[in-house]
Image (cartoon, rainbow, N blue to C red; front, side, top):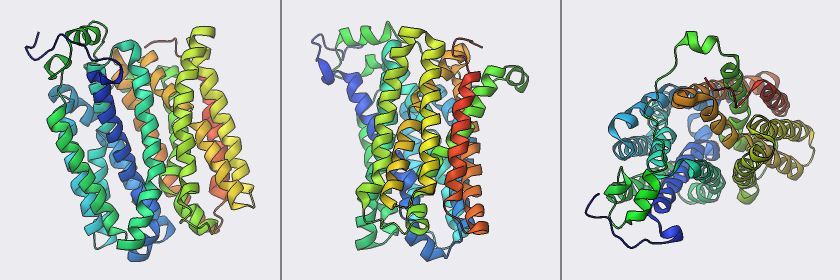
Length: 422
């Protein structure tokens, strides 16, 4: 055992693994601040580059394309070189291109920078998962993941509260300069604090190391299954199609929602608290969904314990979105959109847990395949929303279609069985 390990055990949240979780939660917040910056700052960006709705759609589509392409390669690098080195590299990488976003002078350059930014950020959550797999016992890892995903929504909620004042006083470019600097600060803290293995951490107790290492199950492979294996497994296809449809709806909140509210509904974006409401409720939905699916799985079995939460959440979310598309009042519209994300995010921890349930020794590959399908859905929505609005002039029609697609995503859970391991 490493000589740095102390015999006295800190208790509660002073345990080193919770400190690791805390710094990873901060990364999740920063990640979603960076991701939503282009959406919340869209008015300044649109005015500077004179963007059409379809061009704005491409701005988000290139992010989804790069995010999907590079996620698994970045996870594989984490397996080989460790989460510390890879997260340090990719956070510095995407922070550089966050700053370059503010420096962009043409729409073409902006697209290239957005693609390169996403190629770095793609590795964030696979490598967060690697760090958690080394630092948390298997039975508490899902709860740790729930806190990370909750913080992604908190990042989305904080975005307008931070971005709009910066834009008002300094312009949209300073949003990206500021967020890029924030990423560098996190990278410095990560480099100085984190250790790849618990036994290497200064100040950790011997008891905590034993507690972690005796009960962890580290996955070492992010390789994809062959197409032949994918094609013959209907359960896996149902999961991937479900997540394609899920992300089709979920990415609306990260990409088009501020522009929809401002331009489509004449909403005052200075009411940042209301714009943050969907993400606040989404964070709550992540926690409730994760807790509820574990509770029901113990009471009624894993198959329906997973299925019931996701099925109910997505169908209810779809209904909320359909009613939001017909709402005359802006307040009612934003409230319905908020509850749409609340119920939709019941599914987020369930989906990632089920990917592990059915993946077995291929859990990394199944999670990566599911998430890549989700990014295809994000890309289709990003482009389809812009072209539909540009063609019809109706901003509410895409919301109606997203509601229908969300319900279809929920119905796909009738085909997903978490007990059928590959």
